Length: 109
Length: 80
Image 1 (cartoon, rainbow over the protein chains, first blue to last red):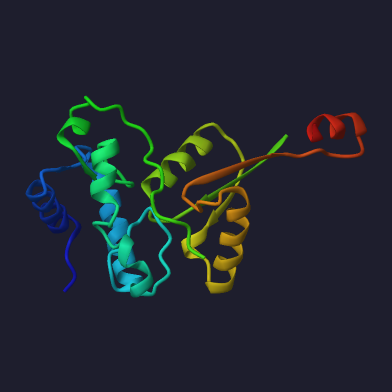
Image 2: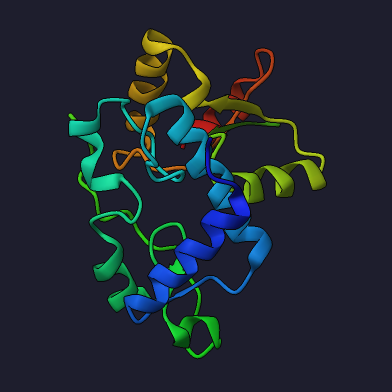
């Protein structure tokens, strides 16, 4: 049986806290991202980043399986990950200006 | 008249935000939902997108001017 969006929300929230981060305080936005993660899990077999195009080949998408390899660097520099799923406390509190996070991943060949 | 093309992913909240903006402002556009395309079509769409945005990130909006008819002055102005 597949996981529900609400259950995944709870798990991701605990994971974020364990990393010293938070989920985006906009619950609807997070649930939208979770819907994308679950859609990708259904079609690829893994929860690749919903904000990036996956190949469907796990070995080529490993860096963009959520949480992606770029999350920590993005949160450190911009206060949020590329998708704005994981954010810092300061970002949620509005202390850090919110801006689109530039893509850190190199384009695929 | 400008031709607007939105390259998006069906799973991406930022793409939905841009779609909502375009729809809300009654801007007609061509939507290319890249992750919903089949293999060869997806390859072609990505290739085309990379001409405009080498980072191939989503959403990408391409806004191009369109010149209708044989108005050479308009054509010259758009090409400058």
